[in-house]
Length: 353
Image (cartoon, rainbow, N blue to C red):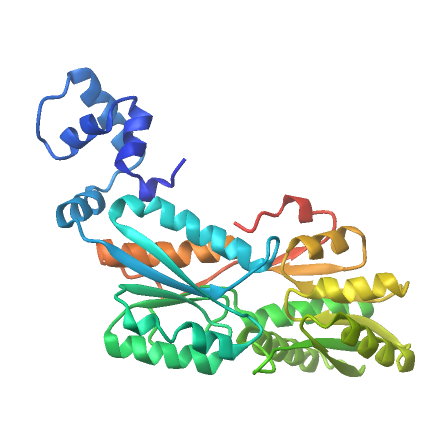
């Protein structure tokens, strides 16, 4: 069932058990409709709290809207697949109102790929943009051009302050990092040593999201007067052999590590190493409930995952742009998703919505 706020003529017709043409005649007061069908349709309109302005305005103007979505490319089962599903859901709900979704993909581990992906963006006509704000500088440059063109845009995944975005949909990244620290210290105590694993991106050390999470993590350690030692190891995306060697070198000289945290969705790579090396007694905390992470969580290798409702981010990010274009409805500036904590006992019930 479609959300009532986005009800379409064909949805009303299906619920009332009548034709689309019959619903159209009732909504626009043209042509004759039997008393029986009129009652059925009116009952449905009351049930769904029907708002005629959206349908009437879009049908009357016959205007087409193009929303460009700029998100990372992904493989099945990855984090951005859930975001994309939410985007598609909103696009499908608004297709009858003349909304068309166009996706531009970039490599989430290379900010230069984002710059290249948007080179042709401004050569085409479009009405709004949804931006996955992974790379601070690149996204600000895009935002400034959109400001000059007076085109509305939303951010998802991580927020960038002091920009003229219409709205942000995602978690509070700083607090998300603090939660990661709290989970880890609750498990290992305030004196145990910690390893922070960083995945290095091509062309940029860290995504905007990871930078803020690590800042929140460090602030929490300071707040609780953590007295252990924090170590760092830099890993490379897509370089399993290099990563194993780097982790080997680290763990061979650091046997007192009691906790490990990584601030992106690659926690499963650390879990894979720990499983292969038969390493036990170390709490491992990561982010995002992708399939590989969920498996390692249920196996007990990952202690906890912190999630951020990715499908809901994509859905609400597009939905608010549609409502702004069609209804001139302005959303709240900051729209924070719940920060979910998953352990092996509850991960099977999580759907990211």
